[in-house]
Length: 471
Image 1 (tube, rainbow, N blue to C red):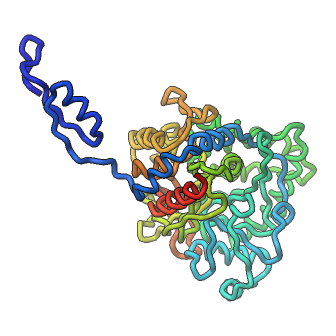
Image 2 (cartoon, helix red, strand yellow):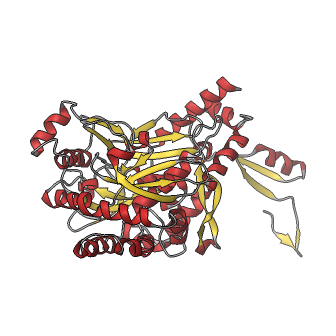
Image 3 (cartoon, rainbow, N blue to C red):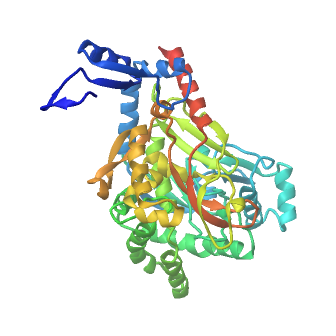
């Protein structure tokens, strides 16, 4: 710009304009000297597909309907029952996280969890027996999401495991999740040694029945969504930090637990287990998010993402406008902090249904509410704040129930929009645990990860195709 003299410009201003030609034309009409720079945001997808969705006359109303359903969804805990009762699982069937897979395509931690579940159910006596029947296809494998269910990490759910049973009073939906084992060497991280199997047996024989009696004895169902909302006020983000949520759940359930007619030592052990398990609430938060996102399913014209999930081999996405169709790509490996002597070479690619939390707008999307999470997953406090601010740019709404104190109680960024992701090139941010690459290892760390871009490229193309056929 030319030098000012006495507060006035001595010549027309010289301006550099990037990207939008209409601005350049308007400035030139006012006598300015304009230099155009050919710059565009680093988005992706074909121009035809982007234009098709942007101009789809159904999109705005469809996204409004989908978002309204998500925001209106509630979540109350109504029961705890074995998976064979609530999921109507056929004999010798195991559920797993992420999109569909086979034994041949399963990663190390997924194989470890499947092996452990076969031994736990009594379908195999040894690791070798379990591997043989799994390789032969004698055990059916199906994604948790196909059964309105979610499971953290490997997500392996077998008929004898007890399930949280949640309902959405606003939309009438149901969702389920198994019980959280704790951290370290656990089945969901691919471990299957005697310690793991002993714990699973205790959860089947003691923990599940006591929780079932306690939940059924309550005069009112537990409002899980309210706990999730309060967690964000107390330093949790709902995915990798669940300390406040787990303590609130314990506070709500403990009076009913101590009144259960069971041996005192069993009651004491249940309370100790819950009190010592900082991730206890995660398996309640996940079906809460599942209820909300399922409410937005099957809205023609909507570009809202209803599922993000990983099985340790592939990452999968589903959208409101394309129903149950999966869009997949190779799962990325998280980058973060490691336990003990473990390092990047020990980490398996991303795994778990727990990205349903980010799909709902908490977890990595609400890191600003839990800056202490960076001590667990890596990064800095400014990174956590910047991540949440960036996620507002790829979502359709702010969730008034999930408020972030440090941002002036702004609602969390909710409802990932495929079109916005493609236009900006900004992929959703997920914070997650890391399972060991080798079956039987267990947890090796925690970190940050993003979906592969091709999931959203496929979803964009499919939504554009559906749009062309409809309009």
